[in-house]
Image (cartoon, rainbow, N blue to C red; front, side, top):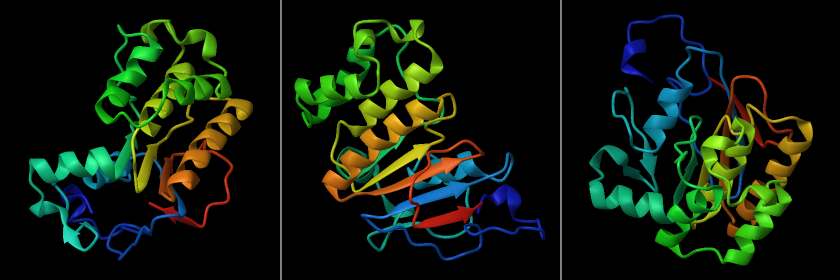
Length: 205
């Protein structure tokens, strides 16, 4: 758990101070209220922060021991992240934002990517600068980018916070279709609004 919580005695959580295992091929939802450490948890899982108490392991290896090479390999081949704040390039077009990753991985064909833009209702936005799109449209571009790599796990941090029901479903279909194709696990976080999916385990943070 976050070190900032270490002196608290009122922690009631399915994650903090618990032994939790995530497995490939399974679907998880982490529900959190504001201030319970959701963003911190996501940062810990992808190795961006180390200010936590406890141990996080991938395949039995303590991630505190990982070097830069280990994290580069992991993030390129095993762990994909759709960030809550998206981390997109507003001056690039939607297509260019996706290609930033796909040119590194060479994982998807242009036809695959065009198909996802179509499925998510933003095919007409491919050549539009991302800064000119709505936040919900940017979320869909960020998902496509996250899928342009091999992964054992996809971590989607509040992926549909700005989408209506129909677009939530489209996102869910695209995301889960690729996750099933790769046999990957999916971890979704939410502070309220989330995809309606058959979660195998729901954790209360």
